[in-house]
Structure formats: C-alpha cells, structure tokens
Image 1 (cartoon, helix red, strand yellow):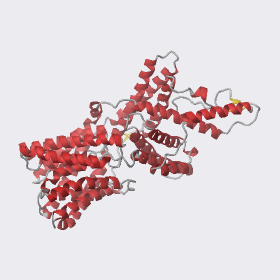
Image 2 (cartoon, rainbow, N blue to C red):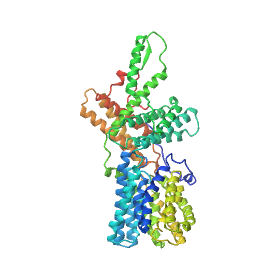
Image 3 (cartoon, rainbow, N blue to C red):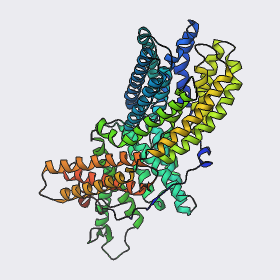
Length: 610
C-alpha cells in the first residue's frame, strides 16, 4: 500500500485569463466539422426544396448526433452513435409530449431541468465524450417551447429519427477506408507525448511536470480507445497496444527512451501503411534465451543471485543497458497481458456508476431550474436559453465549471455580435439561411477544440439562426434576449454549483487506491502460493481487474473538485501499471505464459513500480 502523504486540503484559485487561453487545434478538427455539415445539409436542403423549412429543427436534432464518438473505434462508434440517437429521441419525445399537454412555462422549465440532470448524469456515467449532454439538452429544452399538438408528435419524432439514421451513416462512412483510424490517431498522440516528456526530462527543462501530465493523459486516452472494443483484439490492435506500452515504458524511464524513435513510430502509425513492429516480447525473450545459451558456451553464465548474466571467466559484466532493455521487454509483456485481463472484465452496471454522480445531477437540476425561473421572472420568451447555459457549465468539478462559465459568457457575447452581422445575409432567403447555418456548424466544430469560448462564438449565431427557421424575427429582440439569458444562466448556474459540491470525491479516490493496493497484494499472494486453486486465482485476478477499472472511473469523476485534497494523479497511474503487471503474474501462474524467472536473464519484484 502506498505510503505517500496526502496533500492538504486547499481552495483552488479560479482562473479568468487562463480560461480564455487558446490551445493548439486538434489534429483531426476537420472530421467532426465536416461530419456535422454532411449530416445537416441534405435533410435541410430537402425540406427547403419542399417548402417546409419550418420542420428543419427536428431533422437537425438527429443530424447533430454526428458530432459524437469520433475518438472511438468504429465497432464501438456504431454502438455509441446508436445509443446517442436513441437518447436524443427519448429526450425529444418527453419534451414534445410535455409541450403538447401544457403551456405552463414553470412546468416546462421544471421538465427541462430534470431532463438536463438525467442527460448530464447518463453521459458522464457512460463517458460518451464531447459534446456530451449539451447537445441533447439543447434539443430537448428548445422543443419544450415549440407549440405542439399530440397528433404532431409522431411525425416530428420520425423526422428526427430519419436524420439520426443519416447521421449514423455519416459517422461510420470512413470505416471502409481507414478501419483502424481512431486507434492509430490515439496511439500516435501517446507516442508523441511520451517523446516530448522524454526530451523535457532528459534536458532538465522547465515544464517537465506539465509534459509528464500531458503524456500520462495521452497514454490513458490511447488505452481508452484501444479498450473500447472488448472482443478479441485483431493483429493491428495488438501491434498498436504494444506501441502504447512502449510509450508507458518511456514515461517510466525517460532517460533511457529514444524520442526520435518514438516520433518515427508516431509518424508511421498516423498513415495507412504497416504499423511499425517493436518486437513480440515472447519471441524476443526466446531470442534472449538462445543468446544466453550461446554466451554460456563462450564462458558466460548466470549470476548466482539470478539478477542477470555475468562472465564466468572473470571478465566484465554484460552491458547494463542490455539488462535494462531485457527488463523493458518483460515489463512490456506483463503490461500487455495485464491489459488483456482488464479487457476481460465486464463493465460495471450503469446504476452503480450513476451513484457517485448524484451531486452533479442535483446541481444540474437545481441550477437549470433556477436559471429558467429567473429568466421567466425577467419576462423572457425563451427561458430555455438560460437553462441550456446553466446546463453547459457543469463539468467534472467546480474549477472547470468556473472556467466554462467564463468561456460561455465571453463566447456568447461575441457570438451575438456575429449574429447581428450575419442576420441581414441570412434573411435574404431560405437558401441563404441554410448556408449560414451550415457555416456556423462548421465554424463551431473547427474552433471549439482550441477553446470552448471560441467555438461558442459560432454556436451562438447558430442557435439564433435555428429560431428563424419557422420565420424571421426581429434581430434586436433576439440579441437582447440571448445576452440576458446568458448572464442569468451563467450566474445562477455557477451559484448552484458552489452550493452543491461533491465533497466526497477525494475520499472516493483514496478508497479506490486502497482497494487496488489490497486487491493487488491479495492477487500477488495467491499467485505466489503453490497450493492456490484455479478458482481462487481466477477470483483474485477478476477482483483486481475490476478494482483497476473502478479506480480510473473514480479518478475521472473527481479530478479537480473544489474544496478537497489535490488528487494523487501520479499515484493513480502507477497503481494501474503495477496492477497490470500483477494481473500478468496471475495469468502466468495459470500456465498461460512461462515464468520470466526461468526463461529470461532478467528478474524484478512483481508489482513494483517501473
């Protein structure tokens, strides 16, 4: 069990200027941007041709599902997109039925707030990824304030479903051309980040902690992508997993890493050619054993302590670098097997993942409801703008929530100015309106990766233009209403976030670390006990793998929460790596792999940090 001393509790400073700092654009920023345009354009142009552009908000609800799951392997993307479309249709159905049964604004705001809380909790629990619950909440909240009759609801849902199917096809379209594109991109990013950290650590440059954090985050993201498909991995995915393990080895020993080699692997992976081979640990291990046998015939034997080869004729020991490389091969093999064991564990039930998210759901419901009520009290005709603003603020913790509030306000204020400039062009005719909507869709996805506020500059005119699909409205009223609702939603939403904090998040991470340590120690004892039964060994292995999965989920949910201890991110990553190697030891104990102590020239303490 780790003996690291917990960091004392502290209050984090809330950033302002830092929240607006622009980052580097994503390597694949154009993919979601082009996907949303391809998903929105055909249904909208078809409705324009039929003279029913007033129905475009319903088809757009389905088309916006094309924004999701671009980082997932295509097998996993197909399932995620299908669930997103079903979730969108479920929220839209509740909204449309509610709108058809009552026009009481207070009731509709309450329904919208509850829907926003459910959408936020489910998206966080399932880790659906950006844009997460915001698009779903926007669709359902806007539909609440569109006049409906019960007879119109099925037709409007059918339009959204048809557009959703088209969005699914758009999202899956690249699969035949690059079947492993997402996995390749994630692996390349992990290798590049590991190379950057190795250079920083070796040169003693400033910013080493930031480079290390970025590298750990990139490696974790690569594992999430590779493990998203839980069936038997293909040869390509095996090769990619081996490269990610080499990135982990570079993080563990940056002084021994070769940044140039890591970058060359990253460049090769990004393309469509063959994946570079790092060598199968088991085959290389056989080669090491044959080499050792040859050395023995020349007077080289094993050291009495079993730590590695040595000269039996009194000559110099073999190069320590060779021993380190041999050890890296074994560590790579052990992590490889440990990852396979983790993949075999079934995901936790959804209900068990929702429990820790109760504070987030409560703050979402409270903040959205209060924002909507205040907006109604100020005489707003579209209180859902305030509701959606509040819903968009809620991130994994208070610090990020504050940053999102700053970004949302700045982006929306600049966005209404852009809308005022674009509105005269959009009002030239239906085609001009559709083209402006498509341009805003593209701009939002192209820019939002650099900073949320920059994407909001395009999202704001997009939302305002959508309200003009049924008919043009006075620009001044739209601008004024959006500014007021933005300020109300941001202020009230953040106050609700402060009032409902997740104070238990840090304790959950500590408990999860303790659980992993205990499970690892238990599994190591069982694996080392010659009398252990296969049933006991399998139970220990599955218990440890489940604890590792739970640790990552708990750490993701707790990162950066206000008024709590700083999270031990490095301890989390090291605990995961040690657990992977212990998982490998349990698999080896079952006879599926040879014992490294008998087949290799390198030994190390099982479960120790690299």
